[in-house]
Amino acid sequence: MTPRAGFDPVGLAAVRRWMRASVDHGWLPGASTLIARHGQVELFETYGARDLEQMAPLQHDTLFRIYSMTKPVTSVAAMILVERGELGLDDPVQTLIPSFSVLTVNRDGAGDTLEPEPLRVPITVRHLLTHTSGLTYGEGNPGAVSRAYVERRTDFGASDGPLAEVVDRLATIPLLFQPGTSWAYGVSTDVLGRVVEVVSGQPLDAFMHAHIFEPLGMLDTSFQVGPGQVERFAALYEVAEGNRLTCVESPESSPQTGAVSTLSGGAGLVSTASDYLCFAEMLRLGGSLDGVRVLVPQTVHAMVSNQLPGDLAEMGQPTFNETSMDGVGFGLGVAVVVDPSRSIWRSSPGEFAWGGYASTAFWVDPVHDVSVVFMTQVMPSDHYPIRAELRSLVLDALV
Image 1 (cartoon, one colour):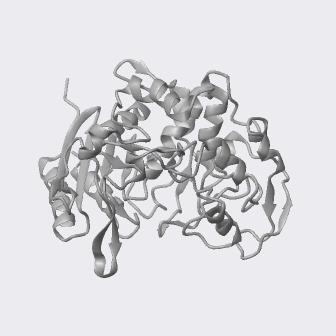
Image 2 (cartoon, rainbow, N blue to C red; image 1 turned 120 degrees about the horizontal axis):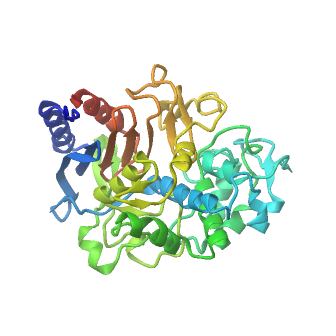
Image 3 (cartoon, one colour; image 1 turned 60 degrees about the vertical axis):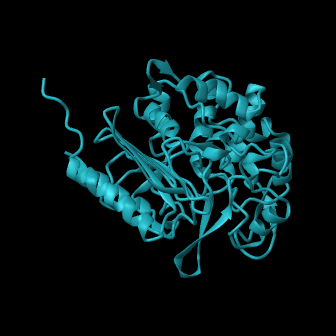
């Protein structure tokens, strides 16, 4: 039997050079790249620092804030309940969260005034999974609706309070648009995390540990960094004036090393590159890993298939993080490439992916049977074209 092709060593060397250049030029404090094909790790490279101030090297077991890469994990948690018949994709959220029965929609959308009007259709679980609910984010977004999010602490920060309380405060703020009519990135997956709690009768962290982390061996993934893990936790940096990296959160000062009151299903997890590869590989393999099944293949197929009537550009999101959304759709928790010829980055049909605010990223390329996890800790994630460059290098390295 002819062995299946992997990666060209020269191409992988180019990935290493790119990582070193990104760190040596001061664009990143450190980086970790984990590439697997046909389930075999082809590259696991780390370079640079997890903490520049302490001159601590980034290593294979470094812990990273994965921010929005939490969203696919929460989506899997919800789909586990859908598979069991305990939750329906078209269930109205208000039947599970009573405060959502009084939701309104802002007639002015993302404008400067709050003009509530009645909801035409209730938000469903499907709307939450696809970000078509009308929910948004507060911090960094314009308009009266986002200002209300900031004022009422509904961005689901680590100390915003129990999920039940944050969700009830959220219900007092009008939506950006009628559910199902557009696409907007926001706290939909945080609300989905509360839905998981209500349906399962367990806190979100306990449900994830029992049904995702423990079965997949993701034992370093959690909402809180334990005392014995702080020495592995990376510092968080921001690109300041002159493209200088400024530390905005040391491992010791992070909210995740203290008491976390808000289990943010949208942005709250800390993980390692190898842990997240287990999660990505489970999706690549149709819901199972090493003989342990988390979801059935049909469920994963639905998650990684476009659930929108068109691409994101057609759904009112022409760009995201300054990147064109032409040719990119959205499934149940992940972005999906529907037309590579229209996508601004090199990709394969059916490729699914997501990233985090600190420039972390993962993607699965089903055409080439490749899974990639990239970790660093730099905000904002759109300052450098890290993800597009790495995608090109990985495709160039394929045999």
